[in-house]
Every structure is written in structure tokens, then in C-alpha cells.
Length: 175
Image (cartoon, rainbow, N blue to C red; front, side, top):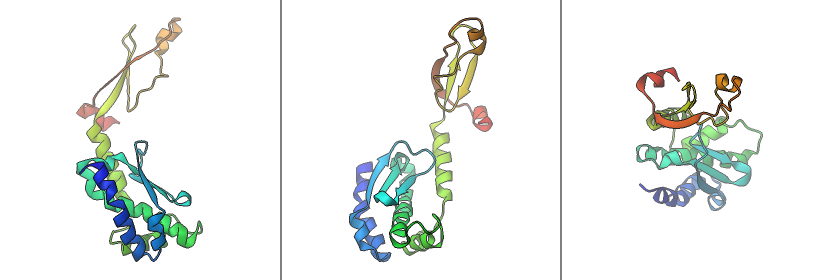
């Protein structure tokens, strides 16, 4: 399913849930958008702004079945804010009740499970190599500020060359 197809379902889903939650006016004010920056969660609600950001990871066909659940999870945060203000816990009983009314189990673990799987499936690590002494270091992300200390101590700039490569199986266990 294409990401535009998924987003086109949002108004219908939001209308269904906000009607069940007895706050139908919210369906018309909640905005939603994709985010490439979400790394630790699949979605994020900004109740004061009536905004839901959804991770682009949900566009992956392997995880599309979680889209409705994540959208509901975040929409419930906005509904709780409109019903109770800031005086309740983020994942408290009020939020749990709304998620259950919408037909989902109130859970948080799917995010950690999915994100762990996605990170592993990306399977990329970054190798930082000194072009002078060939010292290498690896990381999960490029680190352009890293330097080769022995070369710097010798008066050189110590700039490392950064290349990505697939993670090897033994490296997955270490990191």
C-alpha cells in the first residue's frame, strides 16, 4: 500500500474513533503528517497543536498493519487532552479507555519491537577509516567530528573517511 493510500484513510478512521469517544469535532481539527525524523517511536501526538506525526517506517509494507493502531494511539492522546487537559497521565486510564473503545489493546511495546526490527533490517554501520594509519572505528551513524588521535598527535588533521557497509552478524550482537 502506498503512503498516500494510507494517509487517505485517516479522515474516515478519525471520524469513527472520535464519534465513539464522543468528541466528533476533533475529527475535523486533527492534522497528520509523515516524519522521517521519528527514530524512537512510530508516532507522536502534539495535543496542543492537534497534530499527529507518523514515522515513515509505517509506509513499509511489512508494518502497514500497525498504521491504524498507531494512528489511534496518537489520536487518543489528543482526545484525552481535549477531555481532561494536562491533569492526567500520558498513558493513564483515560487514554487506555479510549484506545479500548476504538477496538485496540492499549500497548506501548509494538513500537520498541518494530523499531528494533527496522533498525536490524536496515543493517548498516558506518566505518570511519584514517587514510594515513588505517585505524578504523565503527558506529551506527556517521560521526564527521571523529578524528584519528594518533595522527592528530603527530601534527596531522586526523580526518577520517566515512563509508557505510552492511552490518555483519557478529557486529549485530555487539551493538
